[in-house]
Image 1 (cartoon, rainbow, N blue to C red):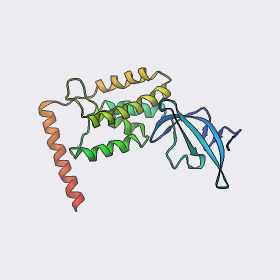
Image 2: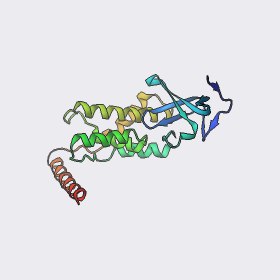
Image 3: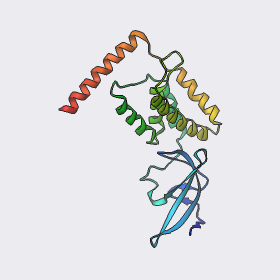
Image 4: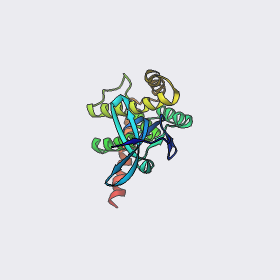
Length: 199
């Protein structure tokens, strides 16, 4: 049996506020509840993710340790958007290892790290298609970024997506000899990494 708490601010978060939960993205604190679990009173943030039709209950005392954070500020959004215009950094390691790294960045909840995934996995129409798993990761990162920017800038997700796509269009797309040279450089870096790991 739970009762709704009268107080609206806990650990610097308040009811009605949008927050970011690392593994789920943007949600809204709809309530702060108190529940009794095994004889102990536990205070919980009720975080609703309307797009996913999901609700999480996060103990207020654990908010920081689970990575619950406030929305990015304008400076962080600017940094994330600038990240998109950079050159894609794709390691020539096995896809399974890169996929794990991308997934970790997406689930870190860090907007700039998520932007790096969007940048690295983005394909312009002139480039070869992505594999199914690349596309899944790209779309997950893009969705996270779009949702947060939409809430921060108080615009629709469509407008936020247009802003992101506009930045991606400015990024240098590699082709031909330059790409081959980059691949060689990446391969050398990977060989060095492997030698360091072995040492």
